Length: 226
Length: 226
DNA sequence: GCACGGCTCCCCCGCCCGGGGGAGAAGGAC
DNA sequence: GTCCTTCTCCCCCGGGCGGGGGAGCCGTGC
Image 1 (tube, rainbow over the protein chains, first blue to last red):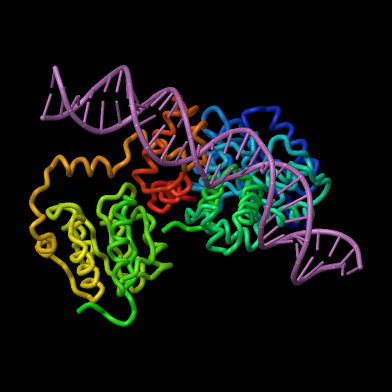
Image 2: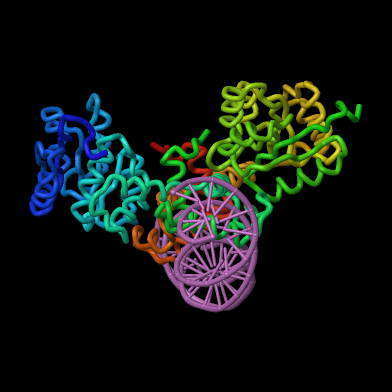
């Protein structure tokens, strides 16, 4: 599906660099179903603009002088009724702020070095309610695959980013503090097998180690504390 | 009465000191009618374990780094259907927390320096529904051992049970997925210093590695997802 | 004065972890 | 049939992690 509906998707750009805003505007405005309805140079200006423009999506930079994208995301989601989707624009996929943005309630992530087709895909996806929860999705969108057109392709990527049953099972045991050897004993398989699953989980989640994977599991609601 | 029934009494151990857990396990497992079905290093991890293991009795330490036995007892009794009996394990018979534990709904008390026979007796009693409601009962169980404890020891326990400011700061960065080197850069200290803090945190939390520490942080509300 | 705890940094050492690559068996989809 | 995914297991290898010590500095408290 290319069009989410008859109405074009309205986007608010929030970035302190005019060049980045111009680039995003050019890329997005080239699409018939996307429309940039406003720009802001800092997170501090977001809330009144959101109230005024009612955008569907806010493309939010992380690092900004006055109010960063994390705080701005928090503020928008806390104070605005029917808040827009927040697409966090980041430079590095393993940026630690990604985790904070997750907690703040961001709906997706976008790498600045992503290609135009991937950028519009990301905007469409979050507009449709899809969550690009895991940085892995960002990496794959920006990664080896062409993504010339395609939601279909983007979805395929997301599908491959989804955990298999076994991987989810392993992640579940990881979130309970088990070591690879303990997981192997529990699942009655070899430790090398567990290592394979763990590596797959880390890769798909864009996590550097099991600790980050567990954090993502908590932040994404994969496991609920208490 | 030695046997409460045909089914052995299942016990969940909750103490931040592995040594205490090992000791309790050894003492209880020596009895044919008692069975240790699980261990936790902090009150924070109790609720999911209780839900999973459905123990008859929870031997709950009072002073724990993240979530103490009082709060953990309250949480279990408030959120779990058909909750287990809570046997509070304490070091000092006149511990002020004993009275709080009473109000929280604990079913019995056990002094750490009690003899093995008294420990198994206490577990059997609460399992049968008997309440060791009053500290007097604790004193009786403690027998002649009682009365010889100093405030210095109490303070040592207190101090050891809580994270220092720096340790809490380090734990906070751990819950954001940072490595030791990244934490060191953030705090502008050496990696060896961070390793010291991390080791202290792991020790106090009874966690084997940073992943378990992060899990405890989430389960205790030290960090809140979303 | 002294003692103690917290913060800092250092050493050595073992090992688990994670990356990279490969490979076979089983099952489903085309 | 072929292709693909999943699950399983194996190899080598480096590096981060965690345990065990110790040590100096600097506060507070006795």
